[in-house]
Length: 286
Image 1 (tube, rainbow, N blue to C red):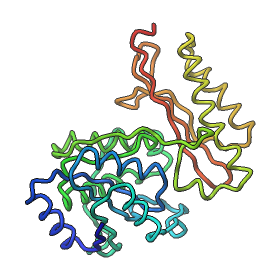
Image 2 (cartoon, helix red, strand yellow):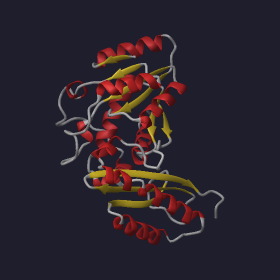
Image 3 (cartoon, one colour):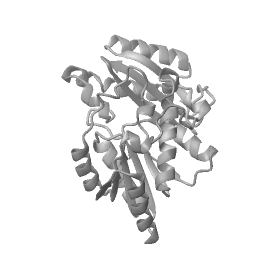
């Protein structure tokens, strides 16, 4: 696996692969990789002939008082993870390489409707940062396909909307969430949790599953179901940000007539913000 740090080197390496008739897969990341990231790369290697991964802690998607400065940078360990997962090329640019003219006045890409829901309303500008950097990576690499994790369900939906609205010729593949044995969704930010918090964290996934089971059993008062579990989550020591039942495609609030829904949660344990979701297709269930 080669590592390059400039757009010129990246494009040259991809051009060589494409001249050999290889299909190009892209896995964008911010580094500090875990088994969930490795699964993205493994899927890319199964779907494409030449896998490019990027590691870039994108300042454009961090808001005020978020963890940009303290976000873990673990390049050497990440390189080994990528190599073992089947990556062919790592693009690890600097801020200056990605934003040579700075970020003030930068042209930005916005997926307006989806970006203003859920995490977008809590983290203003976050998804503009995501769509802008992903569109730049798509232009730099021009991949045939790109892999994103379903743990960040809203991010995946936003990127799919951007690709569809702007006619970007990239196939977007969602990779199922990778979980620890106790159900906690793997995340780079899990490392911020204390030992006690790490023991508490899987409770979020348990509540999502309980909501799924209640809906399957016939519960249709979604607001009451949400209120009940929000109160339980808070009583267990979390500081809930949101717990929502939404339409899977639009992320608008779900009604009892919707058959394709997603249950999403975001909550703080101490200063660590955790997110998770379960996608539920109810076709034939009512």
